[in-house]
Amino acid sequence: MNLFTPKTTASAHCDLPCGIYDPAQAKLEAQSVKAAMEKYAASSDADFKSRAVAVKEERSEMVKHHLWVLWTDYFKAPHFEAYPQLHVLFNEATKLAGAGGTKGSNDVAVADKLLGKIEEISEIFWATKKA
Image (tube, rainbow, N blue to C red; front, side, top):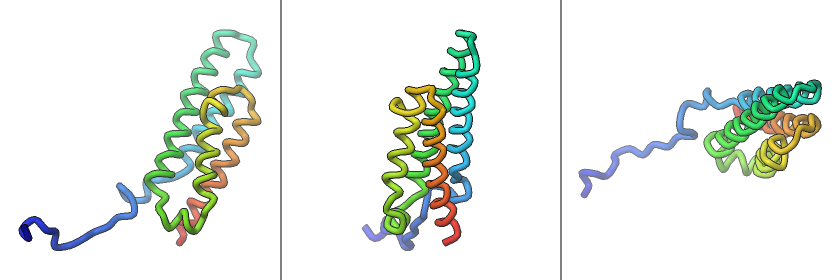
């Protein structure tokens, strides 16, 4: 049985080198959501408005994806201990990108709230990268 016992134990912070994680991906998609909402509001063309909604909903889903990757893959227990508000921030942000938020609304103020939550997450993210 000792033949299969590891000689060395290794641990890693994340699945891949941490350089691949960046909240900028979520922010870029959220900015696209806001732009689609603004274009929707400025148009009277029903076909254009329909496309703007489709883009907004697709990008909202991408925001959630990028946030979930940060939440589940980058941030670890020590981060949540140092920044206990992180779970709430991620929960609020993903909900703002969901059906009760930007996916279900064309209100630019909702997109601004989402961008604000992403900015709060980003500030914590960059603080953890300096540590």
